[in-house]
Length: 465
Length: 63
Image 1: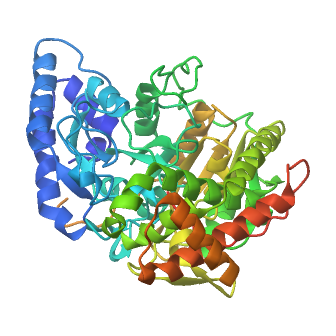
Image 2: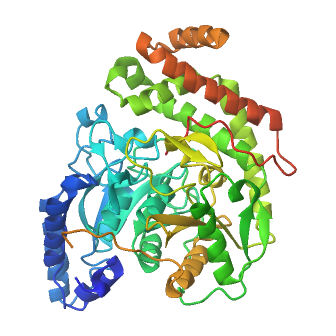
Image 3: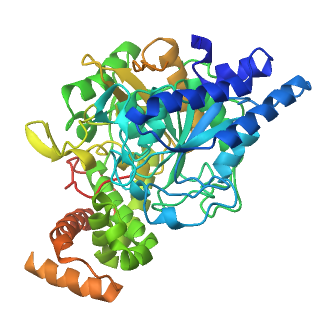
């Protein structure tokens, strides 16, 4: 495909103009997955019949002079915790694989399909979203397209790998503690974790109700902007959906003049490899950003996020922990069991802390519009790698991947992870953090960085492209 | 650790969980980290001023 067809918006433009067949695009995606995904394991299932039927409808609409929508014919795929009508929502687990098929699409899937997007399939993930590496005992480890010996990140690992491999230009993931931003960073693609409550979670199997957010991963900022415009908005059927007006259309060419940017220091300026920290400082230097800002209580916020995640996650799966503990992935079982045993006071204190922390974070944005911080402390680890050395100390690789993402999502703030390439050739990410409901500002900054060549997708070398 | 193990076994009974002997070391290790994290949060109380900025114990993350 030509460079113009590397992203969802480029494909949709060609399809809407009648220069490209949506069926041909869907067939190409299905062929690429069949040829290349055995080595990556990003997909856990494809819906070829549905994809071709949806694509045919898009082509028929164009032929009849109609407009199928802003994603006309663009292939997309979703983390396998989103309901897809007629498919079992396995959520990376053996236990949920015994559930009946979903009767309807999740709201996010429905909205993308209604906008002309063509659903291709479901994507690999950590069991019940509890992890940062997608080394799934049931469905296989999802490999990083840049280096197949390395992980794709998690828990939306399939969502990052499928975009990086060029199988589909748009995927959905979920982000509770960093599960969109970590795979986006390690796979070298853009990832948007919106404000908590901004996109309906209806039809998405929850991990932690008070932290879960639907996010998108894509090879371009305009793909994130278009998908966000489609996805966001109040859903009365989702109890945590934010009841506020939709954003007006986003002007990605508005530039960054007048915006106050700062680099997170303290907690966010240590504990990572030189490459990971340099990714932020290099970007700041290129933009002439010298302001530094301290994010207070980041350490405690991450600690509280862990308590809430473990406790709520265990409560959601308590019945399965009672009846079928041996069917859990060993990577998640012990942590869920520990969460089930945690005292209630720990959870309540963590939630009380969270309310105050969210207020302190909101106050930070009185003096700044966007904060830059690393997305992960190091590039993609090798599959099975237990430990890593950072600042001369050994850390557990898997949980430590969330060290910079967890404090931010804990405050419910929107974050856009942008891809940068390191001297070592592996992708890394930088978080652009904004005030609550300021997704438009983040998209505007990311577009400027992309336009200047300071951020962007470096395609993995894949034989099927 | 003995006290935590005793607590964990009592809590498991209360929750109706039957935990395989082979899993207990891992469960207690993760519970220890959770308790350490809870203690960090307890110690800081309700935040009104700048925090400590260090990294917390880390084996419970995910998602």
